[in-house]
Image (cartoon, rainbow, N blue to C red; front, top):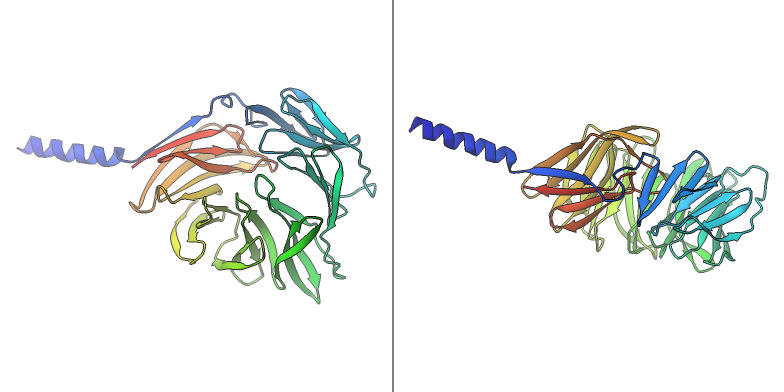
Length: 362
C-alpha cells in the first residue's frame, strides 16, 4: 500500500509538471537565416549597413522600407526605386532633396506598390504604384517654439495612415498631435497640449489608433481613438509604454513596457490580465479565443537579440508555458515583430530573422 501511494504521488507530480509545455520550431525557409536576413512571403531580404539585398541582388540605400509582400523601396543618390520580390527594379522615381542634408529623409513602402517619402521635417509625399507623385501633405504645426521630426504609423495595408508630431513647443509647454491622411489633406484626430507622444499603433483593420504619451512627474498615458477622432478610451500605465497590439476585431488592447504586459478590454477599459517580466518584452498579443497572452522577451545589443524566451500565459487557468530559444535572432526597424494565431494554442512570431512556430499545451 505504501508503494502504491508513493507511485500515485510520483505520477501526480510528474503529470503536474508535464501538464503545461511549449514547443518552438523555426519556420520552413528561414532556419538558416543569419541575423541580417529576413524571409517575407517567401522572399529573402538582407539588411546591411546602408544596403539592401533581395534574393541576392544588392542595392545601396540611404533609406529603405519593406512591405508585407516582401517588396522594397529604396532611396539613394539615384532617386527612389521600387524593388520586386525577384530583386529587379519595378520602376524609378526621380527625386531631388530640397537641401544638401535632410535628417528627416525616409521612405515607407505601401503594399500596393506605391510609397511615401518624408522630407523637410514634416512634409510627406505620396506616390502611386507607377512612381507618380499624387499628393504632398505638410504635417507641420507651424509652432514658433519648434517641433520634432514628424512620424508615420499605418496598418499593414496602409488603409489608415497616421502622421504624428511627437513633440512641439508652444507657450513654453510640450504638446503633440496625431492626424490621419484623408485624400490630399490631413485631418487631426488627437491632440494633447502637455504631453509627448512616444509611440503610435494603428489596428490591423485601420479602424483604431492607440497613442502612448508621457509627461514629467506622471504615469504614461494610453489613448485609443478611432480614425475619425472619437475618443474610445484612456488608460494610465505606470511604466514606459513600449508598444501595443489590438486583438482581431479590436475588442482588446495589449499594452507592454520593457518589463510588463497588461490586457484591457478596449471599450469598457476593464483590465483582463497582466504579467511582469525581468527580461525586456519585444512583442506581446492577447488572443481571446484561447484567453491567453503570447509574448517574446529578449536581451539585445543593437539589432541582435539573445536570451530569447517565449511565453504563453493562460489567464483562466493562471498557468504559464514557457521555452527558451537558444539561437540569436535579428530584428529590424523596417520589419515589425508580430504574433499571429494559426490554430488553438498555436501561433507564429514573424518579423524576426527566423520565423517561429509556437505550440502550447496546458
